[in-house]
Length: 249
Image (tube, rainbow, N blue to C red; front, side, top):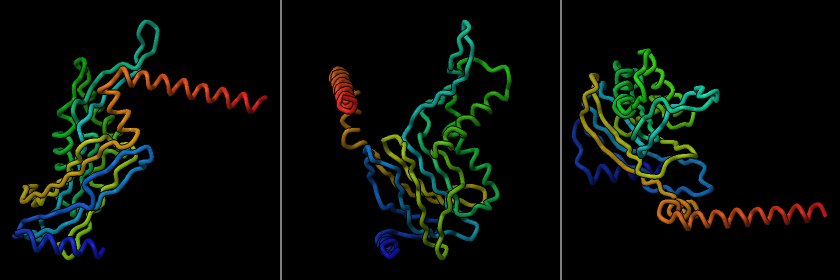
């Protein structure tokens, strides 16, 4: 806590600060994904200068882009298969949004607008649906899947505000996350949702160790990666055979 206070004092002393302003910082800017990675947290902190008590702080965490397919079991020539019926292209692999005022009058409108611009507008349907409610079902299914994996959260986490000036916020990243740049956006908004001031930080998530080695070679040296995988498989198979032979002799 003492480090947090000193950091914010430093921010005050080195940054211009006026009404309807927000300044911010984070406790880490690089995260390594190793085989032992079991999730992590990021501390976001800073200071705000709201015009009045009706001004709210909005914090968003936007992960690198990915694609998600919606599949449905269909029967083709008597065989049940999972057929791709819809596709979300270039949507955030992780998204979290929180607000300092959970009683904001247009909270639901803000949520719908954010989800629409980041997720729903990127829906691609393979065939024209007969039922107009099908599209909404695709939206609900996407949200359900991401929430289940801990990769989507809307106004569920709390922003700590101290003396209406200082703030702190913890971002909890799950065990399985995509490498890339994670943007953390802080925005001051009024009662109508109009943006008054912005601040942005970024965190680089990258693979390290054996994961980095395997990922790099699978993309850039497919022949080597294939041979390496075969050698590892043969070695493990031979080792397992020798172990069982030793146990049961």
